[in-house]
Image 1 (cartoon, rainbow, N blue to C red):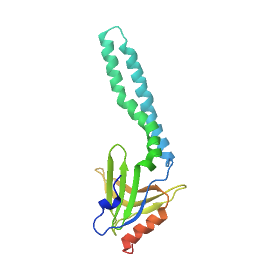
Image 2 (image 1 turned 135 degrees about the vertical axis):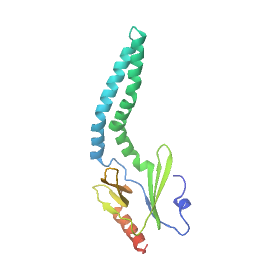
Image 3 (image 1 turned 30 degrees about the vertical axis):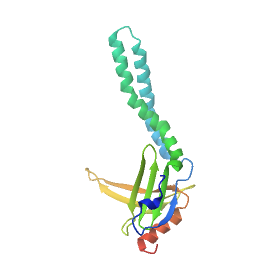
Image 4 (image 1 turned 90 degrees about the horizontal axis):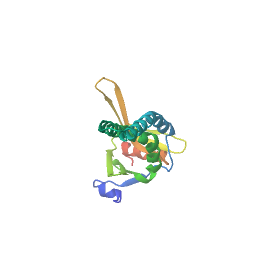
Amino acid sequence: MAEAWEDFFQPGETLLWEGAPRPGVHGWGKIIGMALFGLPFLVIGTGIMIAGLGKIIGPTWFDVGVGLFMAAFSIPFAGLGAFLVVGQGILAAQAHRRIRSALSTGCAYIGTSWVKPGLEIYPILKSTSGGLQKGRRADTVWFHVRSEKDSDGDLSTTRIGFENIADGDKVLSLIRGIQTGSA
């Protein structure tokens, strides 16, 4: 994210807005739900790991082998559980440092710098549906909504947008201006 947004623009594009998520943890309900889902993985994975490590000091090579297998088998489960219980909150608290957003006269840009930097570009079209979700401390502006049917015929909706920003009304107004040609 060290480059300027303009380095990625097409000729004729100009920057209208740039921002980042507001500091703080947003979406506590989702974080708590994921933590509750991950808690059994963490507890059971850690329990199997402790049991496996205890078996390693057994008197026979078979006990050592079973203990090593149990410890190795438990690592993915304990790791997944730890990520769901603790990691979700850490990622949410770090989002304002790691995610940057920009809106140009033609596209929406979302840049990330977690382990590996990334950039996602979404064109703003007249046919693109979107919306604004107001929050107590931050707003989310959806600008790319896609509905697809899966193999079972169920409809799933994917929403992409600028999440937890301070000036959602302004950004939605800019997007509507791009769609109508007045921006």
